[in-house]
Length: 501
Image 1: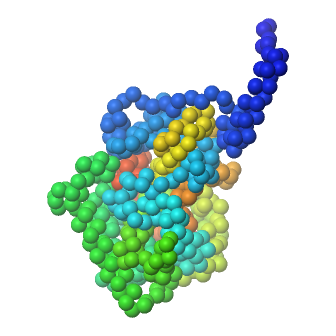
Image 2: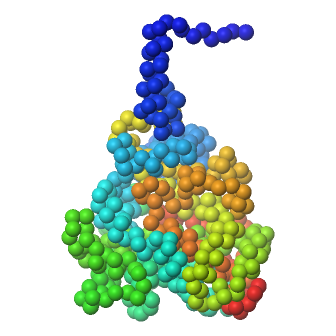
Image 3: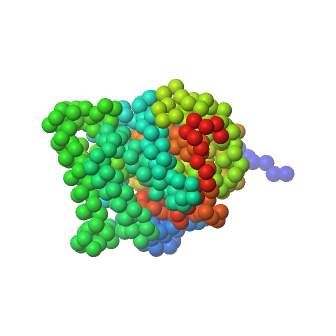
């Protein structure tokens, strides 16, 4: 048996101690603190333009193929102009999202350019640094968990009830269309305080038209290739998007002007009311256009992801009868008052704390990462992380889709199994459907509340069945993702609002 000979030379020993101490002292918070040799970040030799096209048209296939070939870290040209480093290692993600405001890592607003054609640049998503922090602080109060529970739980239930009341036994419909009605009307209440009226109906129609326009695979490709979205007139995607965005902006500016001139305040806490009284990061009043840009961001980014998540959650609860039965068993243990049209915050808090309902919602967000990547972070100084060498200028994104499909965290990850969230607790860097760090989704509390309230209300009042039991794949829908085909259901039976199922 051979043995390793260790040098006894005092100079060599001192040198090794110094190098090791220096490395650990300066990098002790990083997951590679004991690593001495950094590996280059792997990448595919396929032409970048072909990779970008595959990412735009088939993001699930592209990520799965790349992870299988390269592992937890790899370079990917997910836009036509830049390559990004996609990361799905939890320890690396923890470092990225706890150090994204320092010298080595930053989160500039200009890195969110892919969202600009839809929501513009002068808003919480499009800004960076102190301006981003200030806008986030100003607009966050209505979206905090306590306000979502106290103020918006009743709104969500009432809106859901109004949609359910239109369903009749024997009706067949696409779940996504019906869920979109709910989420659009909820976001109009949360952001603008609009309950009904001509402007509310018009905005609902315009928002749905804009998002449906970009939901096809070809339209998705155009979002990621700048010259394909060039505005060459109303017959092009760019032209149609511009016309719809202008109509939405016109409605928003009219609402802003009316509320400002009449010194109106909404009956509920809404984003617009706060923006009308807010100051910018330099202490000046926000202009009407500044407010319009923020509202556009909240309206367009604020309901599509929740629509898709609700569609998937109802799909799985009806695709797997045992999941539906387990959920109904838990819901039936609640008092019947939770089915009424005006639950109080105490009732809603009971609903929010139901373990299996939470597990179903979490498993939906895990298996179907609606937004597959986090916002990018920029490397500003040489950085060794996870055994890889990152250089200044590198752009790094968390790959939530591949994180949520890790077999070491989620055995049989392609199975929908809510019980995994009852069996163990996952860290914020193992389960992160809403991103992390300074750019974590502001609407996460609202989205989670909405998912639970809508799912519980529908299941307790309506017996639905899937028209087809064929599995449905996840594909791109604009910037986000969603079901490849419509999730059609039939209304088999409706129950009394106060009935015990």
